[in-house]
Image (tube, rainbow, N blue to C red; front, side):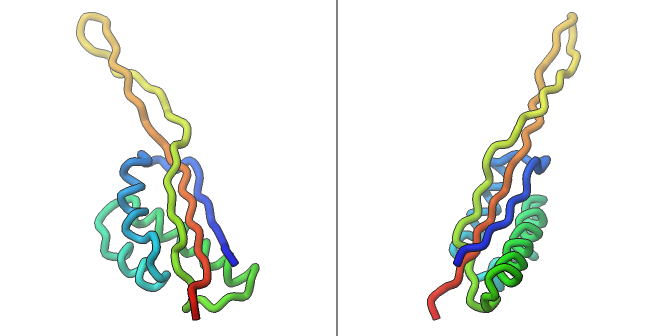
Length: 112
């Protein structure tokens, strides 16, 4: 019984978010939350919030035991890129790409 939560259009690059997602993939939910709590990255707070939403979805929709849940998959996909430019010398402009992400966290019941 899978339950998922999605957070879209997060203003952080997917590369930075994947570093945090790889820390929690395959871990039990309690362990994943404690790892995220002590990870000093911006993405840790975002992944923790999405993980708690996935746990709430599992509890409300499927009546599962929260102690049995583990993080089946945590992925950070590329969202739309905001394109900006910075004016430089001699009437040139440098492009600035502000990347966004779509975060998906899937939790599932582990073996008894």
